[in-house]
Length: 92
Image 1 (cartoon, rainbow, N blue to C red):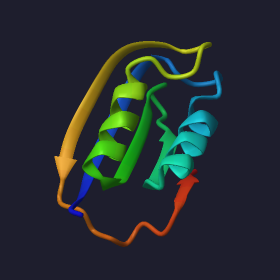
Image 2 (cartoon, one colour; image 1 turned 90 degrees about the horizontal axis):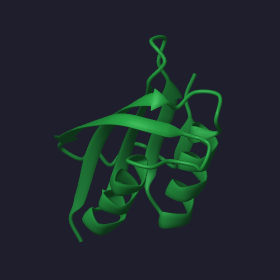
Image 3 (cartoon, rainbow, N blue to C red; image 1 turned 135 degrees about the horizontal axis):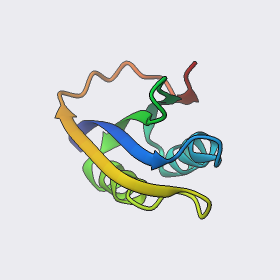
Image 4 (cartoon, one colour; image 1 turned 180 degrees about the vertical axis):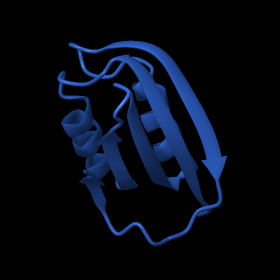
């Protein structure tokens, strides 16, 4: 099955609400590789790589995030898959 890669930047109340941990847990459960990190400007950035259905589910989830988040904007950039992520982690 073809691998896809999405770079997602989420804005709103997304830091300090468990967004990264929830993203990591959902990605691992879905078999998606990549990473998630806080950005200095208050947004969260994530890279998801895996099958199109699994990556699309994670991208869709980013529009709501965990219960305590308030997502205002999601930017998605589709990129060529690299096959080099090796799991899913919270990046610093």
